[in-house]
Amino acid sequence: DAGVTQSPTHLIKTRGQQVTLRCSPKSGHDTVSWYQQALGQGPQFIFQYYEEEERQRGNFPDRFSGHQFPNYSSELNVNALLLGDSALYLCASTAGGRIGETQYFGPGTRLLVL
Amino acid sequence: DQQVKQNSPSLSVQEGRISILNCDYTNSMFDYFLWYKKYPAEGPTFLISISSIKDKNEDGRFTVFLNKSAKHLSLHIVPSQPGDSAVYFCAASARYSNYQLIWGAGTKLIIKP
Image (cartoon, rainbow over all chains, first blue to last red; front, side, top):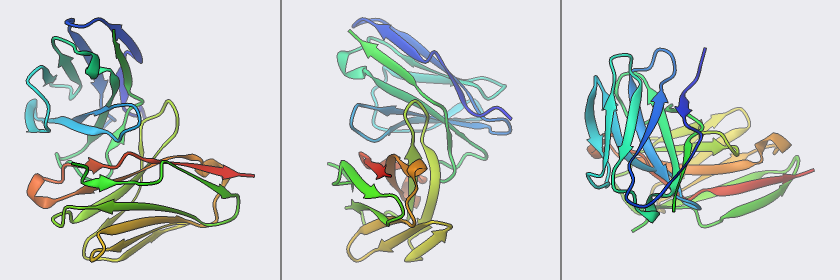
């Protein structure tokens, strides 16, 4: 039973560029949440996708957008990258759409913006 | 404005002894709390949770205590084992925000042999 997978594992971009990160949820899960974890901090909720729609959003600008596909996989897009976007981006999946308990996390994508 | 605080960046404990990790919160609307554990190069793993209607929840070697009046929770690990060495995150959520998780900055637990 595959857990949550994310790609790529690492990424280096320059300021102003755009990036797309990918996530496949755990088998049987239909809800995907994205988090940003800056160095030395806890994860911060970006948004959640359920039934191919953004259902809830944290305090992130519109430069952060996403998508969920019919197979429940998801993408996180960040436009006009800033140095401060350098972080570990975590994807978490769950079933039934509730954000709280027992989210299963992927290993993350580490993004470095130069 | 940090709503969830873990004031100890790191903690070192002898193998076999008790590890106590602390977490404070400021939002009185939080009604569900969770602890996650994270190894390097892996995503966080759910460990244990507690609802605000309880003051204690136990699962094997792990016990979480909640003191609502003090807005404080703690995770006890007894006995501590080498495999417990990891970063531990406290997270809080509230029904009014659809249980969106607010995370602390984490405490790195080191178990010494």
